[in-house]
Image 1: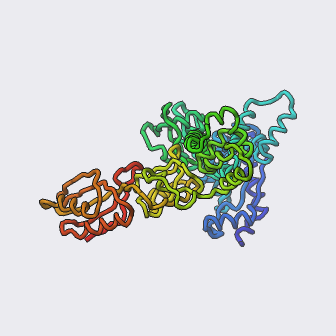
Image 2: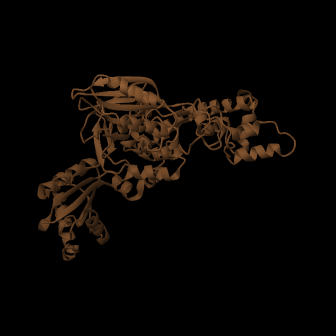
Image 3: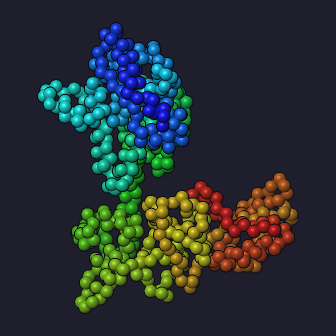
Length: 538
């Protein structure tokens, strides 16, 4: 650390003297301060940036406090006239303040002895704001009654934004994460088509800019032009870009935006919109599920909502209102049976208490009790739910015997996927719920898909069809495509009893001389992802 010690008080006094000698003849009154950077600060910089002490060039820093903004730039020009500025080390936070309203000119120059020194230039007001903070600055101005500067009101925009985030985010950990997300990033400055300068964190996108301009602009953002050219919304913006936001009143925030936005405001507003939309869907779904269960148990749900019975259930469950009960049912947080049990008449004795206890404990239906297997809701069981709305995912076509998992969707009930479906890792973990297959008695056939690659020979279609018929498989749809390499691809939609039946059929098909390969795949591509499973090649 010898070099650090050579930059002692005498060196600092020498530089201060040079600056004062420079300002005097130019009639600029200023206060000049200098200091060595603290050893701990130097150590942290070396550790974070992987530098040696000889590579740390700004061990000393100086501050020049002047009276006006004009004098700030005058001092900057004078300093650069005697000491060479270091490229890339100049920051103008006066014309483009930081988000917390910090203002100053920062420059690093090669000073006496070839040492790099950092110089900050600011006015008295800027220095007070930097040293004491926005609130202290406001308090100082407030003492001068009747002398409020309209510009001071703008200084609290940043604080008001923080309060807005805090009011919209019930989770304090998420609030702190968003605040840290916004504070500790470098800035990028872009222009609107009208020439207004907007500040974004490094990596900020057009969506961030749209929400910065106005919440309504962000919520209807449909595209962006950067420097006159259309670009994807996730494109990071660069310093000096001119950005035009294209809006469409029919467009709404997309969950995928959360993967690339960089500002807390954009992230908060997108999440708020998605949660609002999901709540609307969950309320509608919860009502549908309750009405379905109510018809089975003889309970009129619309009447119970109208006469306040559901409101009383909400109070009993410590929920704010009827919509909260319906939403909880739609999200599968409360079973329909649990709500219905509280609406049923209370017979004498302990029967009512027993019913409520079973519902509260989320007990599964009794073993051996099953409905005809004509739908996913009959074939699959969710613990504690008799009549949930279920659908088989068409991206993986679950068949009885496949390991399965349920996903509480937005407005469609529970979607049943195979456990190894490639779409499952992309789903929200908190919406995944355990499901299981029901009883095996009187099961209806399950739909599945087969992709068969065969030699393009006469009679191959008939042999394949006969093989599946011998296995007891019904073909309900199919398509044929000939390839240039002399093979033919046949895709069939079939019906099987279970996974054992399906894989027995695959084994039988692969034994045919004309068949090259057999794959299990989705017969419908509802989610946009082709599903291939259990490939078996000769």
